[in-house]
Image (cartoon, rainbow, N blue to C red; front, side):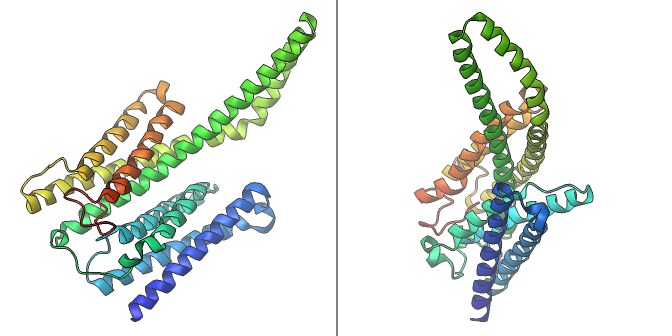
Length: 327
């Protein structure tokens, strides 16, 4: 009873704090008041509090249940939320040493609240209470395999979202430029060739000011590209370790290293897509938008692998609807 109450309290505290963090980010985005009232520091402290609350929640459930809390979808979602918070903490302290702002919280905070919000929703109410492990999960490989897979998902999702942000900024800018050029052409030809030449010279002048004005945007896209590559690289390592450890576990449990189970198949597809992403990064001509498009594909495939396959309730990795291991 005490452990259950403590888990309930920690869940609500972490969810409430990360909600406040997201609110602060919206204030910073639309009102631009972070330098006035120091909301940035408050949001960073909020994510640190969230990290320790989720850590306490996982430890409490571990002690209460007697096994590592990764036996069902609810526990894996909480662990995924913890993974997002961990990525945020690491990037925060790394950038703090360099005296830079950690813009990554705009990705990690919503991701944490989304996963934790779904985990604590009414859909998974039956899984909130810890149960005895299924026979197939009673192995020392549970901690190694599932933790590596979920951490890999967290890093890959975070890195992919950074690539999505890069695509949004890039294509939004391209649409504005195309719109302005179309408007300019319509006006130019309606007033004759002299007007067109005057407008064309004005475009050249405006280009200089626009390039100066968009310098911050250029820096932001470069930072998004770098962070996306680094985080996806880390997630790829976790995913590789998770797949290899899962193969060893499968051989012990089912007598075969690979069975082309739906979960295994989609995990392999996920691994292949991000291997392609890392390969494209070796060619400078494919950096930026091209590699970001591959990461966006990977983002969609991860959700199919992690969540979509589980909804079907089929295969060796499924133990009933919403009562399965999310590895």
